[in-house]
Length: 411
Image (cartoon, rainbow, N blue to C red; front, side, top):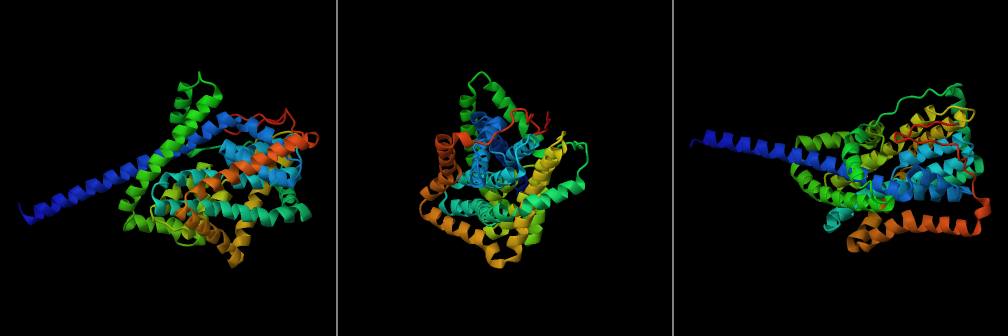
């Protein structure tokens, strides 16, 4: 056999291997998306979904409780889009905007739990897990520091409430425009998730929800483990250059990419979860992923804005106002961190510090996950229920009707 024949055969074999690697990677990304959707559907069944979120918000008797309960509701429902849309509906039903803005802040924090769950897929590989966990929690720390900065200012001076009110008055009209919603990722992942849930339709909701959560987490871990291996093999040359150009080139590019992708898929959890395996595989660093997650914060506001356009009735302007307050909060947060270098670096430093502790002792990851997203918020709910029942926020029962696509009707 000639050298040319051997060379051609080797090239064809390499091309086939590369093609199979990318096909496998795409299949694993799809499995990851389905798994994240399955976990979210399971949590909604266990927690009561939008109705459960609305019930949780009835305990929000002050701004601090509003933040914490927004975090808990989103962690339980596993969808900031659902929770922020619920908040829009509550405002349309008469809940004051000043009560709703802290809930929006908490919803931003609660949605980041999905990233952390995805990072658990690398739990057995110490170095990979530390990188994944850093990339997942940099989003947490940004949202946490944003709350610490903006909540006291909002309580004292109400800049978000005033600015969103002026903006809502400027763009509002007497009739809700009812812009159509769209969800690219949902149309791809809903069929298998819906099919699995229908198979368990005869089971109690808590049982089918528990099975869905367990199956989803198992699929997340499986997809992340093998996706990391395929990414290490594939992310070389041109592929690496494309990822760097879209995400890793600089803060502005990263923010723009994160915003655009999240607007298209209508899920910041999905957007940010997709880059966690890239960090675990060493393809991107936490510092490169950080701007992308900030863009996801901005892009996720589209769902609440779409929900607000479907509101009709005398309070429709307030529903639009809280949706705009959500957008302004995220945009102002990114701008504030961007113009103050020490502030910009703080989330990355905090995530790196936590990642170093997790690398030495992975128990830190479980402690962080449970305490921030469940133990602290649940303690607040329990305490408020025991000692402050007569001060609970009245949530109008007729305020919100929430179909599957987050569209609203207000009576």
